[in-house]
Image 1 (cartoon, helix red, strand yellow):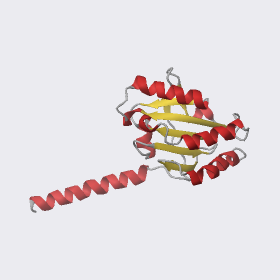
Image 2: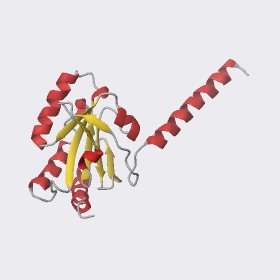
Image 3: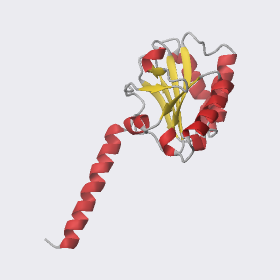
Image 4: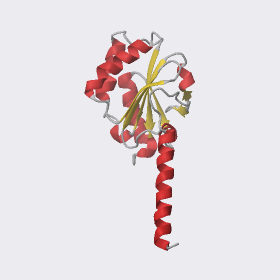
Length: 179
């Protein structure tokens, strides 16, 4: 076999391997989300079980894109402030994708602290892209994942949440509290 043909076949094998891996790992609506554990800025570990029995919104975000979905997070906060999303049945959290940025960890914690204060929430830190790789999330952007009380993915947006979908996602979170 010629060297050129072997290189082409090898390259095709690598492409097929990686595309099959990506599709096998990508979290999609209707799938049960695998659990994880990350720490906050004070070293306290949290997992999805930390909010057992609650609808959970996970905002997995590159620190370089920390404002990308503020329009969506603001809408969720408004629903919470209006009493439509209740502390007993809903929790929104942020997870910083620290591996996707050049920013030092100290700066990431400052950015996260401002977000935690603005949204009165918990921000966790994924230093090794563990969740991004496990769930097939996008790098260098924001990812929004809405999980029901049984940790079934009800909605996942990789990138910017379209303004046209914000109201329906907020309503979905409100409705999921009743299940």
